[in-house]
Picture 1 (tube, rainbow, N blue to C red):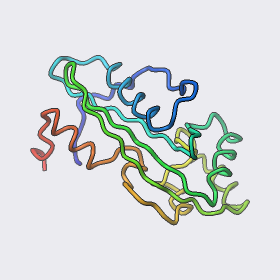
Picture 2 (cartoon, one colour):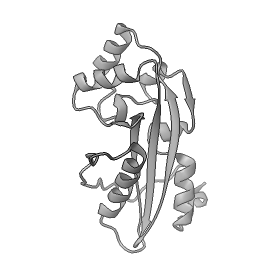
Picture 3 (cartoon, one colour):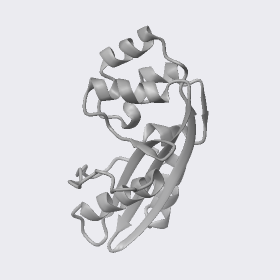
Length: 173
């Protein structure tokens, strides 16, 4: 959107799912908790998001290591899954929030594709062990939903939330 934040302040919250928590409520909770955790003045606008990859009811977060990344990618290979990105915007005590839901199909992976992707390190720090905007884009033949939401920040939803919070999104256009 061409917007430049005044500051980037990563919130320090516990991102572990609660027992029995489903993927969509999990992502929504994290986005809201992140927005509440950032110190800001009453007129400041805080924007936070969380992206979760869901295979049915199972949450595939950021893998701890290459072995867990391989496990996630093997589970996703040849299957459709859901990517949920929740966005929360806070101004003062008020929070506006939305979720973007997208369906994604990952192709069946050959050993060379799986091992090559793992060796790239591109999976690190990414929910579900992949980022569609990087090398993994070659592994994703089909999506339904928001490409920007799969990347991690759904642009249309974010613009609507910022506008609702009183931020002039189109002022800088």
